[in-house]
Image (cartoon, helix red, strand yellow):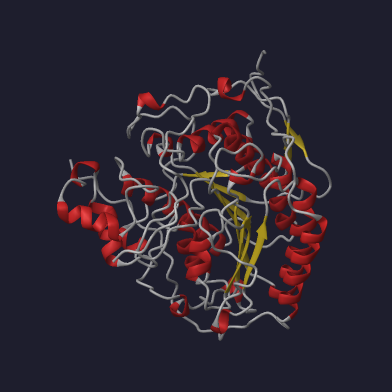
Length: 477
């Protein structure tokens, strides 16, 4: 099939109000390699970026290369010992007995292997989410995208589910400097346990997760898990069964999120767009189309609240690239042509060479009765929140600074697992035998790659320590 030399981005309908979109992309992200047979492939982010460029979507956004998050930035959530370990461990050091002990302690080695450039990968992912938060805090963008982010399983002192550093928590902590209330929404097929756990006791962050529940990683996210203390009723969990389709999802997502927006009135929203909820995902079990998945972004975008959009899971990488490209188009307010433009990874998308993934013929185990029961339970939970929580306003010095470019110098519990360790069947033409490594020469086009934004963050260990910053733009708080 002949490919087109350029993609068509068509104007969207009347609801496609233009937004200022800031897009974060690290050109070397696709070179990181979890190892032979591992299902997590950062190369999918490069593939998504390549589609974005060939659809000319990059011309409708501000393009930023993220400043790598420093260890001090990452310590705002993660423990010192854990960060020090991530910064120092390497494949060559794993045979050392002292390192082996720490591998077990920090849950590194199975789902979360040690690979070349591990800490650099964490810095790139976290730096993009911190930079996105800074853009929103400054009012420089309405929507900020970081497809390398969304690593929602990482805990304060351990890795989990292919995730080492929780860029989402770091980004939300940054947003809380300016915004009184932040809403986190997770549409990955796996429960957003790391983010929920981080904010389980506060009302300044509401977490909402739509996920497969049951005998499925990470095994958390029951509908009765609602938060504790000040955070009681500010954690919403939507447990779902196999085969979830577009109509069922839309019929649940929209009424729940409409009520959440009405009751909680967030000042900023973070949406985790894990693409393993798509039909045909290698580790997922839902049956969503790309448009059904992107409808969540379309709906939240309509509220015109500062919005951070992140990646997450997704293990059929050709479909991940399709999904995140289309959701980038939704963010900028255009409808791309379904026929893919010719691009560097064109052979991945055969035999149809189209943008959209259609649902397959699988049974939807989410019955209408089940959906109604869950919807009613969650709306009842939301009805207990009579008004949006307030926070005492404190005038504090601005804490967000753009770092200067440095001068160049010439105790174990059983862990649930997301992957059984067996060889993983790669996408066609995705040759694991090549074993890519970090390199400095990259071919993907990037605009303004020297434009870097990230917070100069103080050491904050708890969300209660984060106070809103009074600025000219937010006097009404």
